[in-house]
Image 1 (cartoon, rainbow, N blue to C red):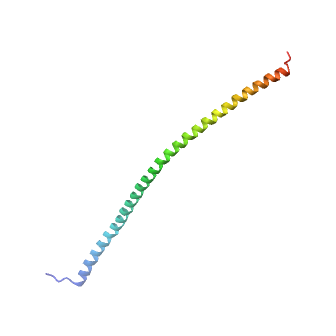
Image 2: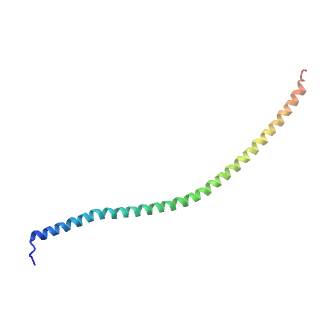
Image 3: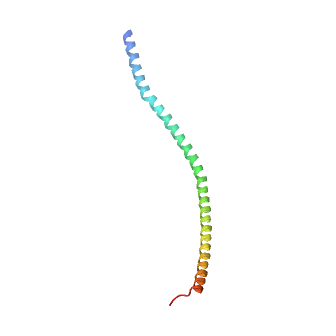
Length: 106
């Protein structure tokens, strides 16, 4: 068997270290990216859960607000219609009184 010189051992160690360095250069960013992707996925799932629960309650509150608003508007319209009818009766009475006091010329 041949004797391996110190230079050959250093060369082999150097080549192995270069190969290992290249492997780590490509492996470490991939691991970081996978961790980051998993973290982002977890955050998105959490936000979807939180917002979906909040918006379900918000939808119910909005529907309740809409119903209350429609009821209030309906009551306001009834009140305004009643007031307009009362004013129409008063205008009719005033017209009658004016016609009695000041006869129309023909």
